[in-house]
Length: 72
Image 1 (spheres, rainbow, N blue to C red):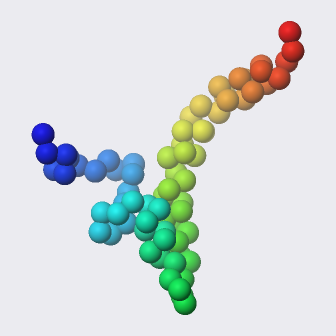
Image 2 (cartoon, rainbow, N blue to C red):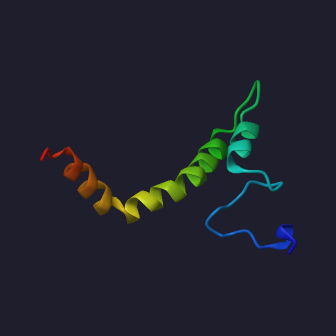
Image 3 (cartoon, helix red, strand yellow):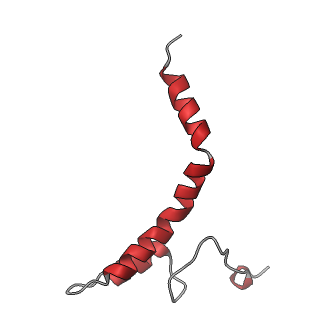
């Protein structure tokens, strides 16, 4: 099975050229100029899956953190 032919998931957008989001952020920051709009957009896309995961499981995080703080 050729993995390069598989479609890219819609939840994980990538910058132009098929690079990862971190490489895209690094490329958007130049030595003498920065495109802050592009940097912010790429950082938002990088944080989106983690934020969605946390919001979906927020009740469990809070319950486990408070339950672990109780002694006995």
